[in-house]
Length: 83
Image 1 (cartoon, one colour):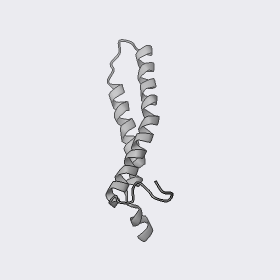
Image 2 (tube, helix red, strand yellow):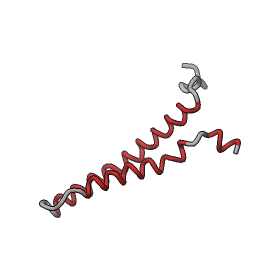
Image 3 (spheres, helix red, strand yellow):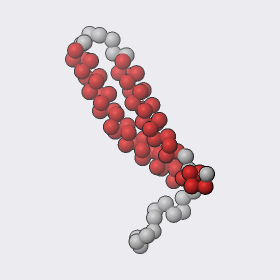
């Protein structure tokens, strides 16, 4: 591959935007999901026979936050530049 040539040169704008969005969703999810796992394990140790529905709610919050924080990347860059 020659210097200065990008793998994304022939891609339409929607694929550029989608690729960037999914990269950020994965990054945020990789940060939030271990936290949710730790909180679920803590709840299991402290309350071994208690209800376990909070884990699913926390998992939904983690994915929701990942999508929310990555959402600015879902807008095409040209809309920011051209206004």
